Structures are given as C-alpha cells and as structure tokens.
Length: 237
Image (cartoon, rainbow, N blue to C red; front, side):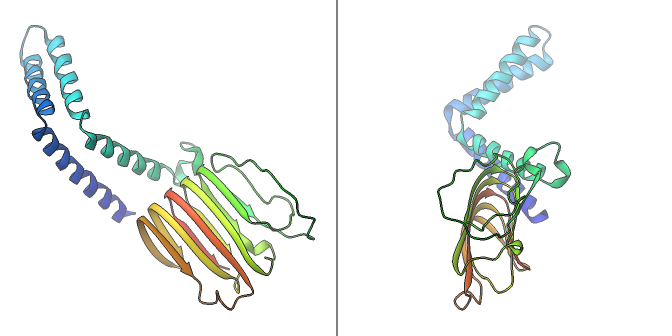
C-alpha cells in the first residue's frame, strides 16, 4: 500500500510540473494567471472594492488553470485513489461497494439445460449460491464491490469451466480445489494479482497464467477478470 501511495504522489507531482509548463507556454493561461494574481493582490492589500478584486482574481485563476487538460487528468487520478482508499472494510458505511459479496457454489443432480436471465446488483451486496444448484459458468458484471467465489462447494464437470467477472472497482478472490487446472486471464488498470501467495503489481497490464497441472487435469477452470482498480487473488484450497 505504501508503494502505491508513493507512486500516486510521484505521478501527481509529474502532472503538476506538466501543468506549470502548459500554463507558462499557453498565452491564454499565462495572461489569466498574471491578471488573476494582480487582482488577488489588489483585493488582499487594497481598501476599495476588495470583494470585487478577490472574486475576479479567483475566477481568472480557476479558469486559467482548468483550461489545461492536465488538471483534469490529475483530478481523475485523485478520484481513483480516493475510491481505492475508501473501498476498505473499515469504510463499509461510507462506500456501499465496500460490502463483501460471497458466492458459494454447490452441486445438485444435473437438470435439463435451458436459457436463463439473472440480474446482478450494481454494487457488492448481492449473494449468489445461498441455495443448492447445479454448477454453471459464471458471467458477472459489477460497478464496484468485493467478491468471493468459492469452488470448494461444488463438483466441477469434467473439461473446461469458466468464470468471467468484469468490475470497475473492488477486490476479487477465487478459491479453487486442489487438483483443478487453472487458467487466469486478468487485466487491470491498477491493482495486484496474487496466485498462491505470489503477488504481482499491475499498471494497465494483462496477465495470462496457467497452473502447472493445467494440461494433465481432468477438470479445468478459466478465470477471466477485468477491473479498473482492484485486486485479484486465486488460492488453492
């Protein structure tokens, strides 16, 4: 976590320097900053029309800065960092997507196949697997939330099985029984990927990983995940 905040402040500092360069080299921004500064000085030190000069100076400074695209990039990165910070379990009351979602998959006698339609919650307050049902491939899309998928409560069919999770913000943990071949295809803008205790930090990267017993396993699970900001952890149980 400390490394991530160091990276965040380093990026923000670099963007701040770029913003200063754009302000100096852009005549509109430079003139606005100069006149805005003069108006603020008149408002702070003058005795007449103080409110007028302070308001004018503030408006000129804000407009001069915000016409540069770099400041919007800085604000966007800061927003992502704040969402990342407030997505911890200690902030459940602040951010609704900090609530944990637990997906427990169980087994029952196979039934005749048929089409299904299921609505998922936007945030992580949906529970899947509260009752017994036959295993079926999972395909989920969430705006934000933490998700746990436990495959220890089901008997996966022989061959290939698939879990697809698309998410904006949040953590995902998948528990896979020992002896099941695993393919992880994970893409993240910012986040960590943990495979049996080995952690990788991703920055707008995609990783594809096969377990050592993937080719020889009779049952395999394909874990395909996409996230903007969040971690993925795959554990053998």
